[in-house]
Image (cartoon, rainbow, N blue to C red; front, side, top):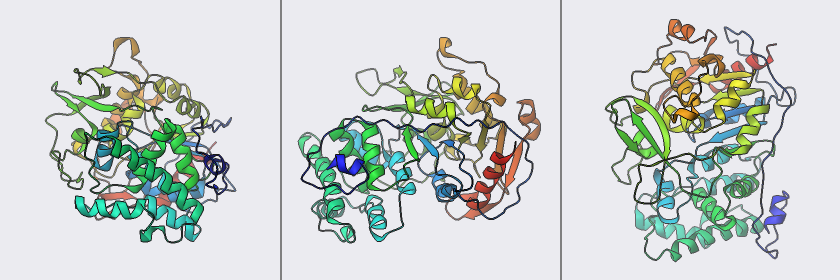
Length: 446
């Protein structure tokens, strides 16, 4: 079944499920020198056929999703690099009971990249993007309806795809039942996360699970979704504040919920007692849970960084979505060595992690993460901010001050203002067409 699916065909169920070692690779020999751009004139969106730059994006699973569809009109040659340390929502429950890396951000990006051109493709996307009710008992009953193939979400999903997806949902259910000492809570559970977890455990490979998910949801083959750390183990994010306090867990850093099942509200989270000094990875096993560990960056991420035309630090939670991908050994080294466009896409407003920040504070935080300034002495770099960032995009009417003099002191003078719009939930966000047009203009400069 899986062999056929991985060849982009529809899998006959008579074939056995076999774990396969799967590697991602997308190479480009092009290199783009930085050029000057001071304003953005919005023109009709460029077509992928006329211009196909290769791009790597560091982001989390939410904020950058809003421009993914528009980015596809510029190019589908994009490597999306995502952290695997999310410990909130249904991801937290999966990790608690079954262990392994967090897959929520990866699943979210895969869904945004998935095909919507046919009724079946849309049905698969709706199924894998579905969340169960908040009420635990209602959620459990609806989950049984889905895994048994009786739910209305299966409408328009062909038999072969239905039974392929159900096989991994059933495998996930089987793994839960085998944990007799744990009771799994399905409240607000993501069906895509359950499918992803079932595939990862079956294959014993996060890369293989991503590949399978990509084929089921029909993501363009030249688009990559890369975990920044390719692991089958649980990873925990920690942070050190400037007052010396240590906070354990991405959720506790970004938007603590005090262990409740309430929906996450980043906008109204309490402020931190002091600013974040650094983020790092912590041991998830044993008695010393405050012990710092040093996981290895995914080699595919390094390969992409060496070859893409543009590196983007996307909008999102600075310290819990972006910096976890930057602090790993080898990332700062390769980014500093490149002469391509390196773009920081500023947020429209601050959050719990960046309260009181100006644009220069974002630059400094990224530089410190890539230089590992406050990490182990033997691993520190001393590169300048301009070696990591040479362009900043800011949304018009954004709430974060753009302190041009401070940026110039850091060696960054190229700031592009991009049209924005007001989102009732999160405030000022980029107008997607204008943002991608600004990126297209930048990449076309020679």
